[in-house]
Image 1 (tube, helix red, strand yellow):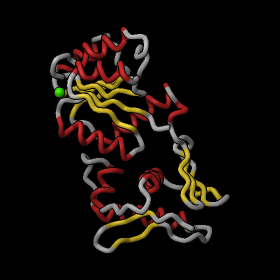
Image 2: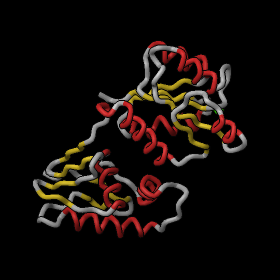
Image 3: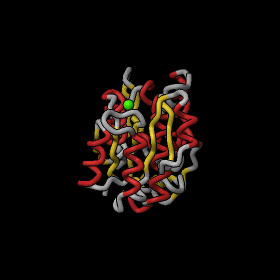
Image 4: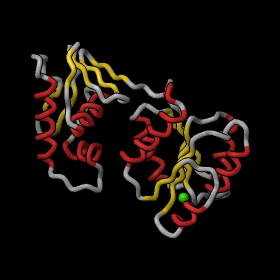
Length: 229
Ligand code: CA
């Protein structure tokens, strides 16, 4: 069963970016563009987790949060507040409005994905798929263990994140730039050939016991994970 995430955000560009990234990570995503719509949608179906913008038309994020906390069905629903950079941050820290966490815009998408995952793991651990298995390769997102057949594969943290990223979208070709954004984040400057170095290490580790290379180099495009047979 996919976790159901509700995004409450009136800025279309941010909403679209979040929707795309969470769907890609296996979430079912609902979208509300103002505070009243958020209350309506949550009364129809209780989300597993809510991303709630602070500045919203009709009802502010704070007010939505307060009202959700007064309803039996959403009293304990995890809520992450999204705020704009500025003096709001002091206010949000001082207010007891009932959110579980908050992030200041512009935020890094990998970090937000990680926070959502961490919050869900704490509140609804059964919702998260911990194991991904493709061919004879298996990764466990809870223990960070990687196995090929019966053998443990030892990876560095960057190689692990690369493999995790590939295995969530098998056969999809990723450019070096896309991999840089996904693994290192948009704010970090890393040269494109760094990607090649880590792909090289990942390949070496995966082939250690004689298995075929599951990572395909796509000329002038990037890399893709092919499920080993
Ligand atoms: Ca807003």
